[in-house]
Image (cartoon, rainbow, N blue to C red):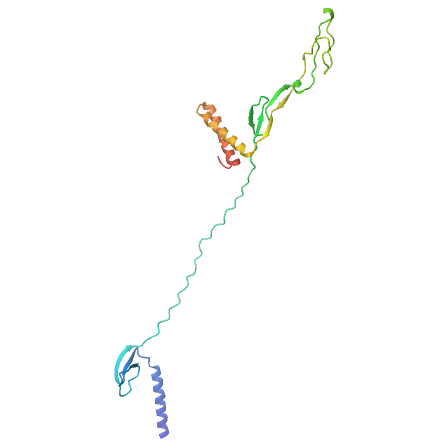
Length: 228
């Protein structure tokens, strides 16, 4: 019988401990201020020993700060895809040439093909022999003139000369020289200035031609000279 009582008390003791552990902790705590005979003070969470003055105060039990919730990282929103750069192929044409041509009289003009203006000249001006007929006075004033000489012969001694009665000619062109690109651009701008000066005094029909020529010069300046 005694053994049963002891066993019952043990079970109650264990059950009480379990209940105490299951009981939630209070939200307050009692803090004791103890002052001994020497006036020294101290704080404790249990009652002061005998012989010391005691002051008790209920305070909120300190609690750990709640752990911060993890901030969700926003999923980056893909931005608009940049369009691929446009690939452009530019073909650069070499500057068109310009030539300066000179006439036999020393006049100068420009040409785009380097072929000077043609002109007709007799062959004798180029040193070619020509056919002539001698005119000599007859002996004693009687008789026909002598026979014509062959080409390249000189008049015989004793008088007379060889007038040209035949011979051809040929076409020749003025000599031209290529202008440096910088000089060619300067000539184009000079010509454009001359067109604009002439435009104010020109008739309407001539103005149409001047407009067309200036438009062509501006296009060439843009292509060959880096701008107007």
